[in-house]
Amino acid sequence: MSKNKKIIVSPHIDAFIDMMSSERSASNNTIDSYKCDLFDFSSFLHRRIHDPSAASITHIRDYFKRVSEAGMATSTVARKISVIRQFYRFLVEDGIREDDPTQHIKSPRRDSTLPKCLSQNQVELLLDAVRERDGPEGVRLTALLEILYATGLRISELVSLPVVAFDREQRMLLVEGKGRKERIVPLNQLAGEALREYLDCRDYFLKKARLSGICDRYLFPSRSKQGYLTRSRVAQLLKEIAVEVGLNISQVSPHVLRHSFASHLLANGVDLRSLQEMLGHSDISTTQIYTHVLDERLKELVNETHPLTKLG
Image (cartoon, rainbow, N blue to C red):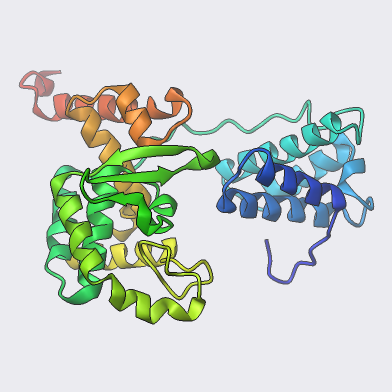
């Protein structure tokens, strides 16, 4: 959404956002994304109708025609359609309107892209490089990357962990995931030791962060408005390490480490149900995409190394 675009406020959008937050326990990131999409939609409609609750299927098709002409990615268009569909279903369920104008709006066909992931050697390169960094900053970054690769946590879950989430004796984390569902995530020895070492120097970051006034409860305190280290800062630091070891920075991110964790565990015999639990997926179909990643890797391996390949 353009910074200069006027935000059109609708009481029905406000009510929908409140419902998503209170009843469906949507994360802050999801809420922000929904607001952005619905305000953009509402601003487009403003010259045609006063409130989006009165939109017709023609209005909605005109909006998506403009979105498509803007050259947005298929995934972005599909997300916008999903958000607007949910909004109108909410209006119907609440009796604000009788029909759902999105009923015949089709989502664009998505390309079946597999998640990016690093090889085990590439992950080791990153971890070896960060372990050599001195001082509290190096210790903190080592703990962050060790935990990301050892657990497959979403970066938003990791940076917002409270101090009490870490059980030192059991070497486990209590994580609140999507929909505020809690799960217990074990740490391997390297991640557990890295986190204990970081906790010994956490006061260094706490003193710098106390200006925010809300940072004391967080495992990774920061001067950000949330009181904890931001996702973007971790991503920035990770890309710095990637440059240092000669990896393509477009292929390296906290989310890629999550995908790498899942793919590597599956390749080493972890079953899908266990992987689903560790990743915090509510539906196993989301976890099954990693079997496709493994299938593709096995095909590449066969094509590159099988002695009969060159005879074909």
